[in-house]
Amino acid sequence: MRKTRAEAREGNRRALLDAAFQVVTRDGYRAKLEDIAERAGLTTGAIYSLFGSKNGLVVALVTDYLQPHYAQFEAAVPAELDLVAAVDAFARHYRRTCDGPEALSALSLQMTLREMSLHDPKLGAQLASSVQQQEDHLITLFTGRAHRGGVVTEHQAKRLTTALRAMLVGLSQGVVLGLATGADEQYFADVARALVSGASLIDEG
Image (cartoon, rainbow, N blue to C red; front, side, top):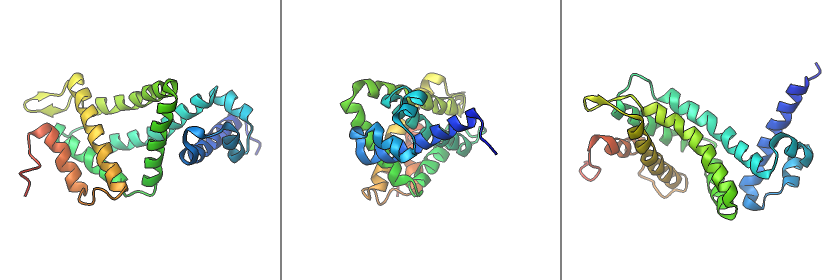
C-alpha cells in the first residue's frame, strides 16, 4: 500500500535520526550532514526540510533518545511510594540500564554531546534546554510524595533531581567503563537513599 505524505515524512525523519545517532557517536562534532544523509539514503535537503539545521537535527536526536528513558523512569516508580522508596526504585532502575545492550552506545553519545557543546556553545544551550524539558518529568515524579510527615515541594524535588541525576550519571559511567565494579543495584539504592534519609554509606556494614 502506498504511503501517505505524512507517513513518508515520518519515515524519513526516523531514518535521519537513526543515521545521526550512528554518525554523531562515531564522528562527534566533526559529523557531516552529507554522511548522515547518505547513511539514511536521503539528501541533505531532507535534513534542512525536517530539522532546519545540523543543530536542529542533533537536538531532535537528543529528545528522541531521552523520551523513552524518562517514560521508563515514570513506569519504574509507582505513584503510591513515599520519597525514600521512590528514590530507591529510581536508582535501582537506573542501575539496571547499565547492563542493557545500549549502555555503551548511550555513554558514547553522552560524551560526544559534551564535546559538541564545548565546540559550539549555541548548540550547548539548545541541548541544555532540551534535556531540562525531560528533567522536568523527574521533578514532577518526585513532587508531592510523602516525606518526614509532609510532602515534597516542587522546589525540593528540583534540588533533589539535580543531585540525584548528577550522582547516578557519574556512577553509571563508572559501571559501563569498568571503574565502579562494586556499584551493584543495592549500592545505587543505598547512595540514592542516603540523599534523602540521613543514612551514611560509611556506616554500611
